[in-house]
Amino acid sequence: MYHLSDLTREERQELMRRSEIDITSYASSALEIIEKVKREGDSALAELTERFDGIKVDKDELKVPEKEIEEAPRKVDGEVLNAIETAAANIQKFHREQLPSQMWMREIVEGVLAGEKVSPISEVCLYVPHGKGSFPSVMLMLGVPAVLAGVPRIIVTTPPGEGGRIDPVTLAAAHTAGVKEIYKVGGAQAVAAAAFGTETIPRCRKLIGPGNVYVNAAKRLLYGVMDVGLPAGPSEAIILADENADPYLTSLDLLIEAEHGPDSASLLVTHSPGVAEEVLLNVDKLLPTLPQQKRSFVENVLNHYGGIVVTRDLQDSINFVNEYAPEHLELFVEDPFTLLPRIENAGEILLGANTPITLCNFVLGPNAILPTGSFAKSFSGVSVHDFLKRSSFAHVTSEGLSSLGRAAVVLARAEGFSAHAMAVEQRLNRGGNDFAG
Image 1: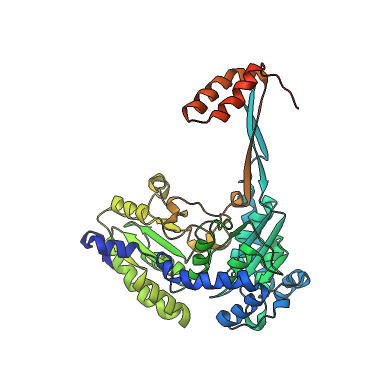
Image 2: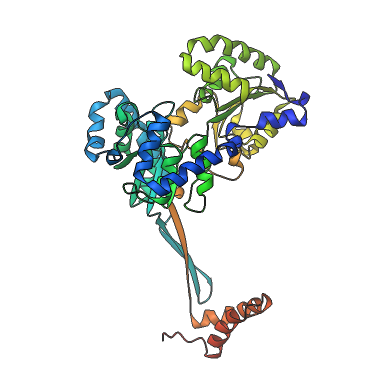
C-alpha cells in the first residue's frame, strides 16, 4: 500500500513504471533474432522455436493446414464453442459501427472538389500470444475487425503448444472469425518473419497484436520496415474506487489483470483508507484460492508493478489515473458517468460495479487489445481503422484554378520553390483550360 502524498518524486516515478518500459535491455537479443531470420528464413524459425519454446516444428510444417482449422470447432467443447460464437457476434456488432464510408467528397470552393477514399491494407499479420496460456479471445479481437475491414490477406503467427500444434480452441476462434492462414511461430522471430518474409511466411505491411517484451522489442526495432501497430505489451489495469465501492468485488477485480503474468501491472487507486484496508485483507484471503501459478503471478505483480494507492481525494485519484494512462480502467464509484468526462487517458473505461474487465476481455464487444505502457495518452485500442488506410483525392476545374492559383503561387515563392510556382503560373497564363497532352 502506498500513500501518494508521502511518496518522493523518485518513488512516484517508480510506481508509474511498468515492465515494458524496461524493454531496451531486450533490444540486443531481439536484434540478433531479427538478423538471423532475415538471413536464414524458415530454418531460423524452426531453430528458434525449439530454442525458446522447447517445441520442435519442422520448417516444412510451419503452416497450419486449412483443413485442421476447419475441423477445429468439432474438437471443442460445445459450451466453449457457444461462448466463442457469442463473443464473435458482439465483437462484430461493435466493430461494424466503426466502418467508415468507402469514399466521401466535398466542394471546398467553387470548382474545387476534394475527398478521401478508404481501402484495406493488403497484407496484415495478426500476432496471437500463447506463452502463459491459450488466447482465443485475442484471435477474435484481431480477426473479426480485420475481416470486417476487408483485408485481402490475413495471416496469423502464434507460438505452437504441446506436440508442435496450435490448440483447437484458438483454431476454432480463427475459424469463427474467418481467418484461414495460420503459422506456428511466435516471439521476436515471428515479428521478423512478417517484416521480411520467409520461404513460407509472406511479407506483411502491418503486424498487430499483444506480446511479451521480446515481441515488443522486435516491433520497436522494425518500426519503419513495416507498420507495427499500437504498443500492446504486458497487461495493466487500475481500479479507481470511492468510499461506496464494494471492497470484496474490488479485491476480485484487482486480481484480474495481475493473473496474466509476472510482468503485468494492477493497481487500486482510492481516497478511502477504509476501502484500501479491506481490499488488502481480502486479497490475502483470495490468494490461496488461485492455482499456484496464477497466485505466483499475482503476488509478483502486487509487489512490483501494482498494489494499492491511497490518495487525498477523488480529484487526486483522477489526476493519478490520467498520469498513469492505464490500459484498462474500472470506475468503481457511485456515479461513473459523471466521472467519465474527467478521464483523459485510458485504453478503455469500464463504468460501474457490473462491468469488470473480464467482460470486456472476452464477450462485451469493444476491443480488448489496448495501448499499454502509458501509450493510452496518444494511442487508441484496436479497431477496424487499424486495418484500413485513407487516400485523399482532388479535382480542380479551370474556375477553381483561377480562384486558388494565385495563393498557391505566393506560398510557393515564399517557401523558395520556383518549380512549384511556375507549374501553376503557366496554367494560369493558359487560362486554366482543362487539357491533356
